Image (tube, rainbow, N blue to C red; front, side, top):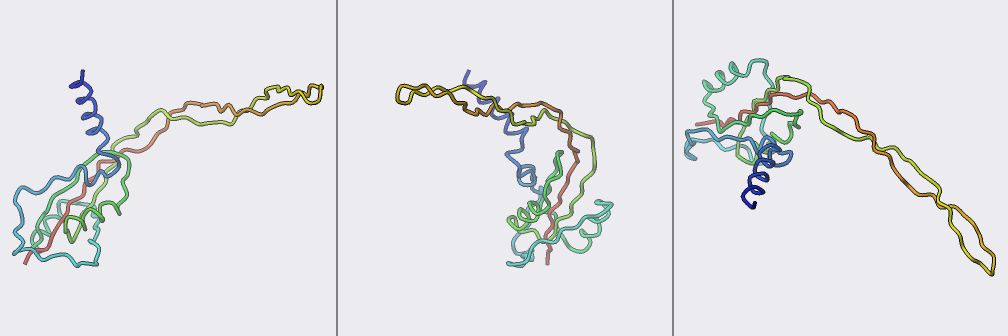
Length: 165
C-alpha cells in the first residue's frame, strides 16, 4: 500500500513538473561539461540575453561558430510559461544567452467552476421581556457551476548558451 502511494505521488510530481518552474524542472544538462578555464563568465549584474528566432537550428548553428557552448536545454509541453523564469534560471546556471522557441500544438481543456453568489433567509426567533421577536438571517450558499476551461498548449524549448574563450 505504501509503495502504491509513493508511486502515485511520484507520478503526480512528474506530471505537474514540480510546480510551475517548468524551465528548471525539465532542464537537461549538455553531455560534455564545460571546463571553468575555457568559459567566459556572464556579467555579474547583467541578465542573460533572450533570443526568439524563427528557425532555432540555424541560430544554434550560428552561435556554435561564434564560440558559444550549449550548457543544456529545457523542453516541455504546456501553457505558455513566463520568459522571465527562463532568464532567472539562466542566470542561476551561468548562461549568457537563452534561445527560446514556442510552437503551438493544440487546445487543452480542464474542468473548472464558476461560483455564483446565492443567499437564503433563515428565520430566527429571540425572546425579549416575554415577547418573541421574529427575524431573518442571511446565509451565504454559493453555487458552483461547472464548465470546460480551454487553453492553448505549446511545445516550448529553451537552449542555454555560454561564451567560450
